[in-house]
Image 1 (cartoon, rainbow, N blue to C red):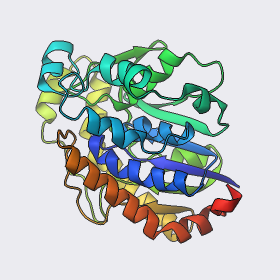
Image 2 (image 1 turned 120 degrees about the vertical axis):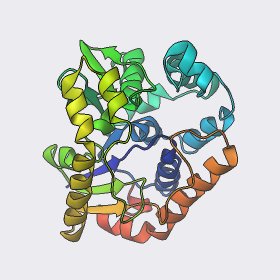
Image 3 (image 1 turned 180 degrees about the horizontal axis):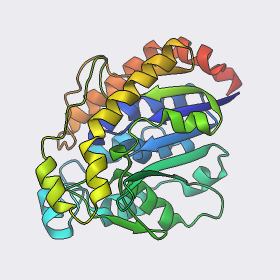
Image 4 (image 1 turned 180 degrees about the vertical axis):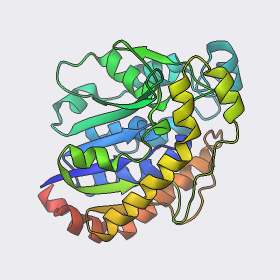
Length: 290
């Protein structure tokens, strides 16, 4: 029975996700495949590479560095999260990502992005032996490139933005891929309902040359709320197990306060630790079996 891990995005709400996956790694709990969306794609890679603590560590280290995430970066590069510094310099120079371990690990890893031309979700496997490592980092960037504050990412003949625009919680994708038991990590608390986008007129103007993307964004709240309903239905049927914050997280899409990041991360650890027995039972695995 294939076991999957589904990681929602949410920009720096992903510090919660970092806390969850670090506990799983420390306890030796593994899965057969991961799908990450946006921040979920960014931080989930550390589970496949076996680098517990890395996600929260480099975000705290560069929280106040204008090269990382800042208005300066947005105005000078077109990306709020600096494309070169965040996705290529940090993982290769400052807090090195273990590509060798990532590629050796047989765990499948999928990222979700949005094709701005078709307005459809794109699913791409990364981390296979022989993959182009620069392209791997670009696919992670594409999945995480939030609209309005990021440039469109061009890779493999596609033009891409944030995967959360078209598939925020890709449980259905993992089920289609044959993953029968899925642990779903959300970054919004129970009862959250997404509302229509407040900045839709600006979005329509900026992406006027991509009408299908605009249509997808206009309907994003419908897609997201339908996915939450599906997750709840599947959880009741025993087809997934859900971890989520116990309250609205105090962090926004951006954050320059390392202490806030740490608190959100710690909450993820607390939630995962509290549900460890249920996670191990559901995945059919104990730490000694990992």
